[in-house]
Length: 180
Ligand SMILES: Nc1nc2c(c(=O)[nH]1)N=C([C@H](O)[C@H](O)COP(=O)(O)OP(=O)(O)OP(=O)(O)O)CN2
Image (cartoon, rainbow, N blue to C red):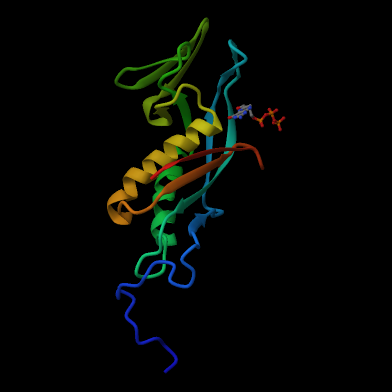
């Protein structure tokens, strides 16, 4: 017989080939790109001009193998990340928690103030993110938290770690790693 007669759902000992092995799934697809505008402050009070990036994303999760010998299904993880990248694509990303970049919304418009400067966007163009500064590191954290909550029911509690990297500019990665 060319195929195993063992059904995929039969319980196996995780990492049965080598009990000391650990496993990780990484997904880094060309589709994981989002084009978005942002600006940050740095060095205390320097506020960048608004500008855009073609951000890239990669993700990995660590944990034991399941009955399929998967950490998690690539496809499920890929689709969860795509929901995040698609929600950010062609938007301006604004910080919710910055002390001086103040973001307010009325029924139609999002107004942003930094000292004497002011920017106004249609609400549908703006994503207000729960971050202090919209750095690659903080965007990575939010994507990691969102993917974790989106997939927790499906992937269960046995995973140990999730890590998301956000690339701002062809190799400049901010990475966030957190417990599952
Ligand atoms: N650790 C981090 N460092 C920096 C971040 C960051 O998120 N994490 N972000 C920035 C700025 O957003 C900056 O705009 C980065 O953009 P970039 O285009 O790479 O910078 P340049 O304008 O110098 O690049 P060009 O290639 O000249 O366009 C800075 N640091």
